[in-house]
Image 1 (tube, rainbow over the protein chains, first blue to last red):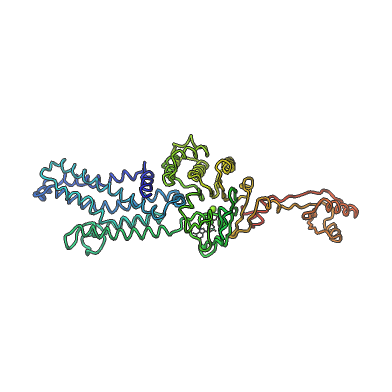
Image 2: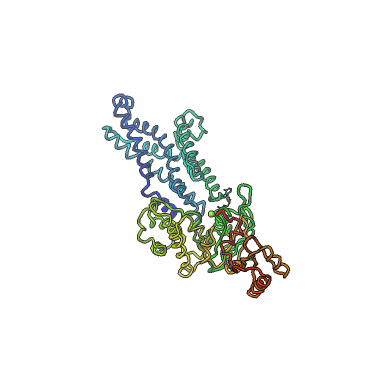
Length: 237
Length: 306
Ligand SMILES: Nc1ncnc2c1ncn2[C@@H]1O[C@H](COP(=O)(O)OP(=O)(O)O)[C@@H](O)[C@H]1O
Ligand SMILES: [Mg+2]
């Protein structure tokens, strides 16, 4: 049933701007780095002399973090908006499907789209590096970590935005919260380790990115379950 | 006691919203194969009731049984046998009618061929590959009915399916619905704020007003309530009224006429004889039949506000 629900979610976003957004996010991040490296090539290539690729990946990851935060809010808002527009919730929920699974499918769709977006960072970054004429070994593990770890550590925010956008027909409040979240995440490294806004930066006292990822996944699961329970109990208007 | 004879039965169904019971102790009972007209003025509580029937909203009090099963306990197996259209139709505007139906078809797990079947029932086959946002309201309404029919339901719940349509659209939907029980073998609950809209197709009606179910019976019993009265146009209504009263006839009068409730032929003849004998001039004797609509309006006290 879950697969069927997810296939329906994908069918519903056909011909939607949502897909464009999924590509524009990582493309924008890498394009800005192209400008950055293009303008300051001499300075940056000296700065990262002992690892040009690593330098590029570091710069991409900083920008990608902000893009992830605003992106997860927009994806949640747009995917829920498809239902709010003509109040399609009442049509779907009068069908023989579990309310919890309907919410679950929406959350999965958001994760899937963000996963695609994050994945695109890899080829886009590689293309930029090659275009800049980098040679030497590509730190592929580092690149993959940069692409996927922040998303996993940001799961609580994916779940919060999905819950808010599904619960509220008016998307102004969820979007405001999403923007505030993005700004908070930009200063993530200043927070103590227990603050969730810091987790997607993968910084912590024990220098273990997987700790941030683990915390994000656990809290993400909790927030998701709360959102799902509220959704299943709520009257559909 | 769970009465197997009823396809749908509610007991003491109550919903409290904003501090008042917008649905209050409603006991609906709908039998197999019926077309049940669920009537009430705007804001009477029809949609709220229907939401509870479909498990979209939780009753504050009372129970809903469909096919003899409790909606709270067996929501999913029950909904497999129910098709519904609640309030204005829901659709994904950027998708075509076919794609919209495909969304629901996948969730129901019915064969692909059902899509063409229901499209032809509501006569949207030709328009099926157009984005629904360009549809007229009547076409959207028909798509909503097609969606409701997709799973070959045993019970069809249609909430004001003709609301907002022009007379031609209303007629079209009405013909479509009337043809359904025969062709699809379904029981239908259809709500409306106009009696005239369901009176020709309903076999039974329930009338809800301010949350209370004030009438539930066959449409024929309602017609019998459409009692007739006889109007006598006379020269001096007040004197004529005194005369009739002294002979034991109950009448009412105003400046132009006398009215007598439910008089049979002999009574009318006797009254005319009396009046003529006492030299009253009788200008006309007329029968006035109250329309069903008028009775509905009197019952719901919304005369003039509709
Ligand atoms: N969420 C709500 N809070 C408070 N009152 C509500 C709410 N929803 C509906 N109502 C009230 O309940 C009454 C019944 O509404 P509804 O069931 O939509 O009527 P109908 O479908 O018969 O026109 C109306 O008076 C409406 O104002
Ligand atoms: Mg209504």
